[in-house]
Amino acid sequence: MRLIASTVLALAFVGIGSQSEAQTLKVDYDVTLAGLTLGKADLTSTFDGSKYKMQAGVKLSGLAKLLTGGKGAATAAGTIVGSQPQPASFAITSRSSDDQRTVRMGLTAGNVEAVEIVPPIEEKPDRVPVQEDHKKGVVDPISALLMPAMAAGNLTDSANCNRTIPVFDGAARFDVVLSYGERKNIDVPGYKGPVLVCNARYVPISGHRALRPSTKFMEDNKDMSVWLVPLEEQRLLVPMRVSVRTMIGISVVEASRWAFGGDAKVVPISAGGAVKAGAAQ
Image 1 (cartoon, rainbow, N blue to C red):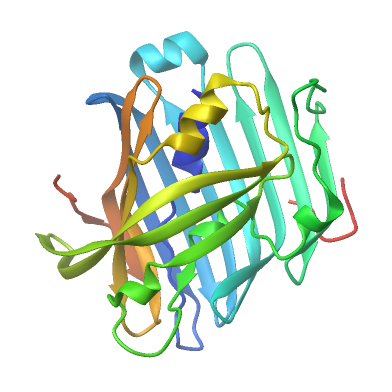
Image 2 (tube, rainbow, N blue to C red; image 1 turned 180 degrees about the vertical axis):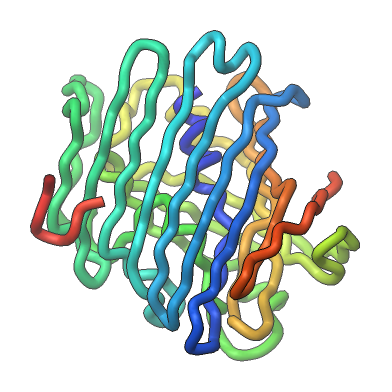
């Protein structure tokens, strides 16, 4: 369930307004596992020039809520520099029926300056130590979904799919490696046009437990993909749909309501088929 909740919180639809006025994105998500409704998530993102602020939340429902009591909330803020975000702060709180954990992180120019985890992560013999160089040139899990175009030209060019996203969540360092899959054309309320379909791979670096079956499963997992929608004016690609095979079935997170602009009016769609750097608190 923690894996699913982390996936949900990381699925953000984000955009950067090229105008001087702030732009706001509001998205609601439907979350399913093996075809069954698992819960909902929401995201509000505000963009002012190159600066961004994000707030995300997730609540499980039905049997998932009964079994885990799972819910969580996350925030992130920073700036867009080149082809990768540079977060300044990140915070996430996850709750279940038997525990709660809060992570706060401050960064400068992509380098982690301060981390606070309450309660601390339990030490285990098979946990791979995080080295200092593993915390340089990284993004947090929320900011990781901001995907500026890699180069000039068509946003659905395969080159925009081929990237490695270095992620550090405060406890574990891993890469999300995207590669070109295909192009599709979709026609849904709120958007009609091409999407860039990327295959995704998970590459653990440190902080993970090397002997856990779930770690090996995700490392070998070749059944992950993301559909990216091009925002031409902002030169940005944003996820519309993410599918991940888990050890108990396929988890899909996709937008059910999407609005982007100055007033962010909500439009139903169906895809069809923090701590400042150096000041931990």
